[in-house]
Amino acid sequence: MQAAFIETIHTPAVVKEIETPQAGAGEVVVQLHAAALNHRDVWIQKGLYPGMKLPTLIGSDGAGVVTSIGAGVSSDWVGQAVVINPSLGWGDDPRFYGKSFRVLGMPDAGTLAEYIKIEARYLCPKPAHLSFEEAAALPLAGLTGWRALVSRASVRAGERVLVTGAGGGVALFVVQFAVALGAEVWVTSGSDDKIEKAVALGAKGGVNYKNADWAKNLITATGGDRSGYFDVVIDSAGGPNFAKLIDVAAPGGRICFYGGTTGNITDIVPGKVFFKQLNIMGSTMGTEGEFADMVQFVNTHQLRPVVDSSFALSDIEAALRYMDEGTQFGKIVLKIL
Ligand SMILES: NC(=O)c1ccc[n+]([C@@H]2O[C@H](COP(=O)([O-])OP(=O)(O)OC[C@H]3O[C@@H](n4cnc5c(N)ncnc54)[C@H](OP(=O)(O)O)[C@@H]3O)[C@@H](O)[C@H]2O)c1
Image (cartoon, rainbow, N blue to C red; front, side, top):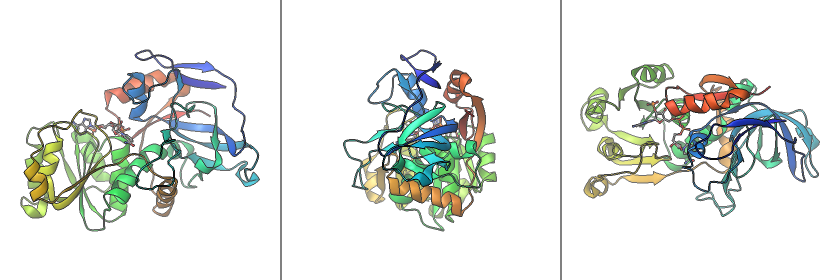
């Protein structure tokens, strides 16, 4: 079968022919129809992801059809269209993953291939209203966004939520989930065009974080006084702008972050956090139960992941460079079948 590899850091991804996997006990083989990129794949290529192990068959997101099963797996799965949970080996404690936790796509062989073998417990039936490309866009970003917004930040209907960098794969799911849950959603982005697109998805408005006064502009846009502050902030940028998230958070607010795209968090004034009684929390991926809940929510609300563009598997390097540029709005998908 054809599969996409990163062989060494700072070199282009390559597609090569390898043996098709066979299902072992408790496993299935899925013929992938589509896969999707995450920023993780770019970090791996740059050697910037924890636990580097190359060469690696990359890819955490995939959707396809089960073609064969190993011992102990229900035959009901054969022929079933599925999405794959990439959060492997979480363990029993929903608060934090255990020692065997890993993300699909390094060290385990990932989804940028014609077939994958995976334990059956990581499968969910594909939501029927989604194409394979839309379904492939869902797993890692949807799960991360769900845990951050729902399990960790405990968003409630009617609350005001800020989502930073709304053009990102995870961030857009946070926008869609928060809107569907009845929150009032605002965004930041480095592109006015992306802010408009987020508004079309149900956000109330947004500001461009490239403007030095973005935090003041945001407060003005939302009402200009304490009523303009945010109950929940979901961030993946970190970096110097994080301190301003503390300024725009409401007293008693929750700030949850799951990434550090712009580097280390600097210049936090402790008093602003403790006088405001803020809760600042980190979040990563999610449990098997959270994955199932997220897919169910997408089904119930008939949500459609935003797919920015679709590449052939043979164009994997172009897709990675496109993600690295950061001009996309939503997920970058690889069409495999
Ligand atoms: N902990 C976890 O489980 C987990 C899971 C998934 C992702 N992550 C991390 O989360 C981050 C986003 O991942 P992704 O896959 O969603 O990436 P992505 O689709 O490539 O999106 C990255 C987004 O970052 C935003 N951004 C860039 N500079 C920014 C700034 N100065 N302020 C605010 N936002 C900024 C951009 O938003 P605009 O385009 O709107 O400007 C861009 O769309 C990455 O660092 C990734 O490693 C962590």
